[in-house]
Amino acid sequence: MRNMFIVALAGMTLAAIPAPAEVILLKDQASVTGRILAEKKDHIYVDLGFTVLAIPRQQIVKIQKTEPSQGRGATPTAPAISENKSALYATASGNLPERTVRDLVQQLGEGVVQVRTPGGLGSGFIINEEGYLITNFHVIEGETQIAVEVYHQKAGQLDRKTYKQVRIVAMNKFADLALLKIEDKDAPKFVRVLLGDSDALAVGEKVFAIGSPLGLERTVTEGIVSTKTREQQGMLYIQTTAQINPGNSGGPLFNLKGEVVGVTNMKIFGEGLGFAIPVEQVKYLLNHRDAFSYDNENPNNPFRYLDPPTKLQRIAD
Image (cartoon, rainbow, N blue to C red; front, side, top):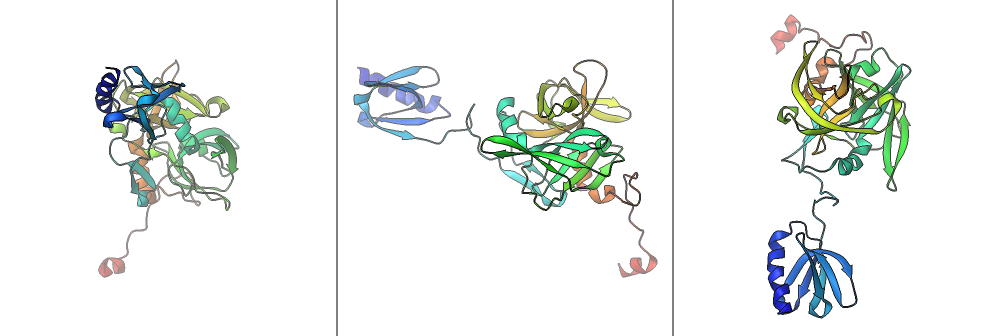
């Protein structure tokens, strides 16, 4: 009877456990799939998800280890990436699963940076392994000396590295966005973050921000989307209850899939009234960055106008 009870549960387990850790092969070609909680002299105890089963060792033929699935606390598999190389950024192909903020912060830590200038401190995020990053225009406005602090993962810990050869590639002061590039000779390949879809956000959806408010580096704040279309000074912003303070400027606002859905840039008086630039504005800047390329001769102009074609050029074309 005891053996029959185990066999019956084994059939249920295969359908009920979506994230197996071990497969216990039993006599009579039966099996149980679950996570082993404890191993005693006479029994092993297996978590089936809905109950814990004690299996006599005399009934066990073999225990097979399987790869952990992408469940809570498991190491996630790398998402399929859609590269937009001409625009320097990447997005996820397909729908990513939602995860906890705790897991995502560990994964995304290297992609969030601090942007330092003689005039202050802001945040930013890496969009390309070659060192391209996004921040707010007001973080670097009027500045020529820019440093970026990146936190590299080494031996399971974050090691801060400062890069001082930073070039302004493009900027749009009307959207409060700037594209920078780290050009230090010893710079490695950087860990980037993926851009998401701010249009797909829903009011009430959970989001979180990573940045350095008031100089408190690597601060994580969590909240929800209060509205997707809050008008401020002629622009539409994502309003969120995630706490945003000076120093968060230019940092990423993530959804629970680990995708950037906005760029934090301001708050108004009161608690839980933070605002972020929709990531679609970032994509627009990157897709048309030649029109917004930085001009050393006129650094205050966010637009770069190409010379009109001459008559000879038009005839040749």
